[in-house]
Image (cartoon, rainbow, N blue to C red):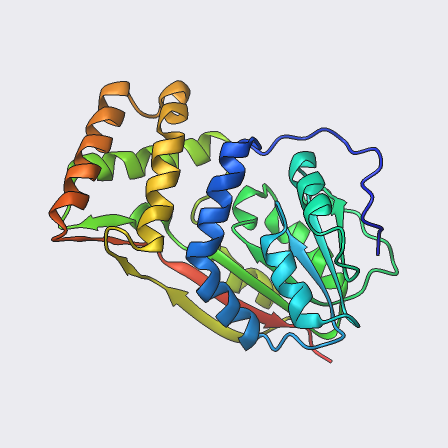
Length: 278
């Protein structure tokens, strides 16, 4: 596996941005979904001494959790295309000898033949891939016999809703989906993973969906509030939302939160573990 030093990195662009504001939002998002993530990784039976890859690792939040699970005799490789996040992760976790990072564009990934993994983890990553099956096939080839592919992806992001319904929220949710589509992303990529893994000859070890009800102040409520308030202006710039619609949404969201009589219903999140046959 590569060293922690990044060397000469190719410039690339994560369309949601890679500034400090986005870094902070990613931390909020990670904390909101950490219980679900850890539960899935425990179900995947991550063991001491194993070697794992964290796809689209960003600033390395899940990479760190995996490094704790595999222990000092194991190895974790975090891969991402965004240089800023890799430098942030390498600096933050420079004392973790079992954790390294590498810049890889998962649209056209290349791996060393010596890179063999007991598991590959991905969370909200295949939605960014134009040819997800090609990438997943290459990743499956890097798995050892008995290795696991562990993924979390939205099945249908557009189904996110407020209960009781709020028209301005529904309009905003549609704008989110449009923004992702305009950038070549599929916010419902999870619906394809079961079929792809089966075509790759992997055995489906676990298949489940997370849907949660979040009240104002809950971590999942804060996750979507941070996301929507941060990216609302960008959606206006992209033309998928008008400025008046954005302002109405934010006003209604705050009013809804103040009433404390409803909740946010999160979009269905696929949790899947697929195992390479021995």
